[in-house]
Image (cartoon, rainbow, N blue to C red; front, side):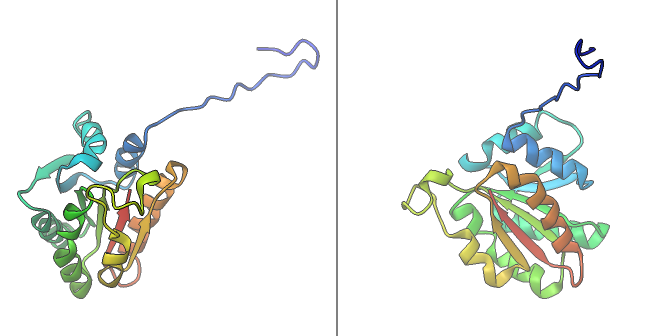
Length: 175
C-alpha cells in the first residue's frame, strides 16, 4: 500500500498471538527436541494438547514421573542431546526430585518442565500447589518459575543453554 501523503510504503505490523502451550512446543522444536518423556496432569494438559496436534515431537508416556526423568537421562546419555521431561504440578513435580538429583550428580543435561497452579493462586495453598523452585533448587543447575508468558520462550531457550553448557546438568522450568 502507498501512503498518499508521503509516497512511502506503509508497513503493516503483523502480530501473532500464541498460547503459552504453543510457545512451549515451538521452543522445543526450535531446540531440536524430537522426544519428550512425561506423565500428564491438569496443569500441563494444554501443553499435551499442543504436543498431540503435531508430529515432530514424540511423547513417551511413562507410569510415574520419576520414571520419566530416568528415561530422559538414558535418552541424554545415548543421544548426546538433552533429555526433556514434562510433568504436572505438586506431586508430579516432587516425584521428579530423585531423577533430578541423579542427573545433577552424573552431569546429565535435562530440561524438566513442570506445571504450576495459575499465577494468581501461587501462595494460596491451592490444590496441587508446591514450591517446586524451592524444592528443586538443591538438585538442579538452575530453575525458573515463569509467571509471564512474554518470558516463556526466552526462558525455555535459556534453560537448554544452561543444561548443556559448562558442566552439563538438569534444569527445571516451572510453568
